[in-house]
Image (cartoon, rainbow, N blue to C red; front, top):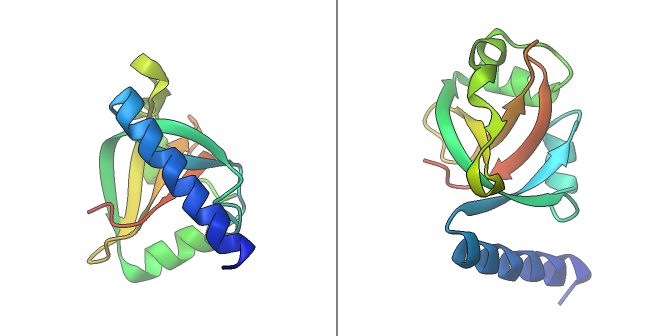
Length: 127
């Protein structure tokens, strides 16, 4: 068993414990990543926080590819929905779920008032 496999198994145990303890689902949040590859690469080393999805935004394949390739670009749909992103009761991060239309995997996003991403978490099977 590789170190990556052990780390992922440990993270899953922590996730299950957190879900049972606080009643929310939890995600591994990455602070200011530059692209989707950074999020996937750093997924085991982010900060673990509970979350609540406030809105799901579905993008076309082209728009999703553009979105995931550069997180340092302001997006209108993030700016328009940034007020939904906040820390609520039990310190749950209220966020947006961004995913490609027809796909199950997505990204949890906490956006600022200018349409930039502050935190991102990769979420498989967010349908």
